[in-house]
Length: 334
Ligand code: KG4
Image (tube, rainbow, N blue to C red; front, side):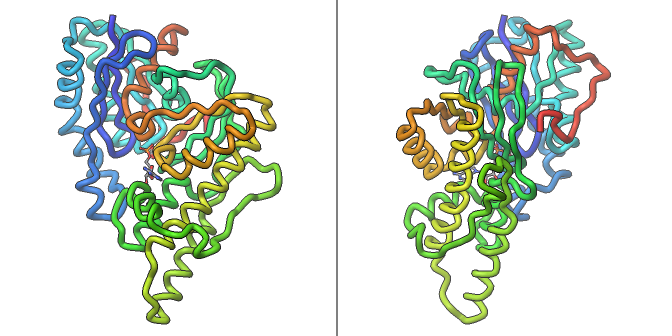
């Protein structure tokens, strides 16, 4: 039996085929960056419309690339939430309808659970329990992961998510959308100590995050420079901003591991693709003899393979959905 997994929570239409467990046969992602970059952010209505166009071809491509057909599929898993409901409904309804027609079991997966388990697709995978940082465009939270079905949130952002801060800073610098990849590219050429942007810690032992003050501070700096007709040193701004985000993410992740006593740390979400975050977290984990598990870049940003992994465990626990199950916008995990 093979698993067909579908993800459509935000602006990527994705499908994957997996062998039971963690072996990925195919993982297809159709990005919508071309339409949303025109607006500097995601336009929900356009996202759902593109999902409707792409869901069928993306699923077909995942099956073809896996060298299989629907006849070999024994389980369908799809993201049920959180995310944009219009987007979620396309993938989730497609999955439920396909399962109904083919007489297959169907599981709904929480997108956060997918990110929390994405490291399990790697050859070197963590044992349970572990402490996880999930940082994406919609979420920035710390969790303990006791098993593939047991997650407890330790802290979360009180305002912007880390990826959202990257996207908003990119927008105010006219760098396009999504902001993370372009900022990290420019930051590599800049000086991270050029501008001292604030690090919001919210108390010595707090595991919550706040990035809106940092974003405002970058906006104020840029406005002041522009008003004084000063040239903007874009690479330095990017490097200094990135350093402020990364330092806080790393410090709080290590504080969380200290509080849980876990010896293993897992990273996930789109911001986990950031090279400086990966570098600093690796250095700090090495110096404290903590095991660090990071998904490969393909599995950091939204993908359906991680939904297949999380979905398989829900299937084993008999947590199936039926035709009436609905998508949800906010995660009960978060
Ligand atoms: O997980 P994801 O694909 O979608 C969700 O938000 O669920 O994450 C996308 C986010 C965007 O905000 C994007 O700017 C950010 O991840 N991102 C990065 C990098 N690559 C993607 N942020 C910082 N550095 C990167 N290299």
